[in-house]
Length: 515
Ligand code: SAH
Image (tube, rainbow, N blue to C red; front, top):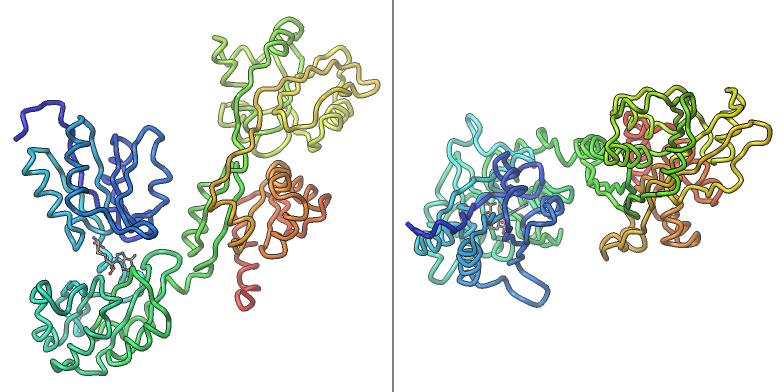
C-alpha cells in the first residue's frame, strides 16, 4: 500500500446507462463530495451539470476528429490526480467492470498503491432491455443471460466470444455490447453456426434516454432493419425468445410524453417538482436560465427604512427573490426575524407568497397588480394609508418607482432594491434551443421570463420561436405579457403543477401526429 497519507482515493463509479436517475445513491453522493471527476461520453450530461463548481472535471471521451484518450493516459491521469491528494470519481457509463475497462484502471491504481473503491452501476445490458420491456430472464423462455462484446468478430479478441457455442444455446438471452458496426457479421456468423433465422431479436439504441428506440425483427432480418433505421451507437442487440414480450411490456416508449423536449425558462420555484412529473411521463425536461439574480444592497433605502418606518407601516413584496434577498439582508444586519413583527406585510404573486410562507410569515394582504403604481393604488383602496410608509421590496427589472405616491392615499412609498437581474451568458446549446433545434414546448413562467426571452431574441425572434414551438405562458401576468407582445401562447392562468402537466399532456396528444 502507498504510505503517503496525502494520497487521495479513486472511486470507480458506475453512472448507469443514460437516464441520470439510475445512478446509485452512493455514486450520487460521491459526485457532490469529490475533488475531481474523470468521465467519458456515455455519462449523462445532467449528472455533470449538477456538480458543485469547485469539482474539477476531466473529459477523456471521444471528441470531434479525435479519438478517446488512450487508456494508459487515463490511468496516468487517475494516478496523478490521486497523487495530488484529490479524491477522484472515475465516472463510467453503466457498470465500471462490464466492458468498461474499469478492471484495467483498477489494476493501474493497485500497481501505484493508490487506494480505490468500486461503486457498481446498472449496466446497459440490464437497463436497456428493462426499458424496452424485455425481461432478460423469464420462466419458460429464458433461464440464462449471456453478455458478449460484439466489438471484434475476427482478430485476436474474437476468440473471447465462443460464437459457435452461443449459436447453439436455447432458452436463453444473448445481450451484445458494442456491436452496431459488426451486427451483419455477427448475425451471419450465428446463422452459419446454426442459430434459427426466426429467433426473435432486437436492437436498443440510446437505451433509457428520451431518445430510446427499440427495433425488433427475426434474427435474419435484424441487420437490414437496423441499417434501415440508421441505428447509431450506443446500442445493444438482444437475441432470444424473451423479445416476444416486448409488444406487451413496452412501457417506456409508450409513455404519453415520450420523446418530447420540454424547456422551462428559470427561475420557477417548482421547477424540480415539475421536472420530476414530466420525466415520469417520458418527457426530456431541461431548464434555461436567461438571467441570474445578484443581490444588491441599497444602503440609502435601508437607512431610510431604519430611520423612518414605524409600527403599522407596510412591507410589500412582489417576487420570490425579493423576499429571499430581503430576509437574508435582514439577518446579515444582525436582526431577528421577530423584529419584522412591527410591520404589516403585503405580497403579490404566489411565488413570493410561498417564499414568505417558507420563512414562517403569513402575509396580511395579497395584491393582484404587478405594476408598482397600481399596487400602491390597490393597497390604498383597501386600507387607510394616511401617514403610513409602504416599503416596496423589488428587483431592478421591475418598473422603476418614481411616481409611486397614489393620489390622495397619504402614504409615503419607499422603494427598496434588493436584487438585480443580470442577463445570463447562454451556452451554445441553449441558444440553439431558442433559435434552431426548437424544443417541442417552451414554458414561460412569469412576466420576467417573457421579457427576458424577448430581450434575448428580439420580438421577431420570439415570434419565430413561437411559430416553431408550443409556448406556454404560466400565470396570469405571463399570459398578459405574452399577449401584449403579440406572442402566440397557450395560456395557463395558474401555476399549479397539476394544471400545467395536464395542459402539456393535452397539447401533446393534439400535436402528436403533426410533429
Ligand atoms: N460499462 C458500460 C458498457 C460500456 S461498453 C455498461 O455497463 O453499460 C459501450 C457499449 O455499451 C455500447 O457500445 C453499447 O453497446 C452499450 N451501451 C452503453 N450505454 C448504452 C445505452 N444507453 N443504450 C444502448 N447501449 C448502450
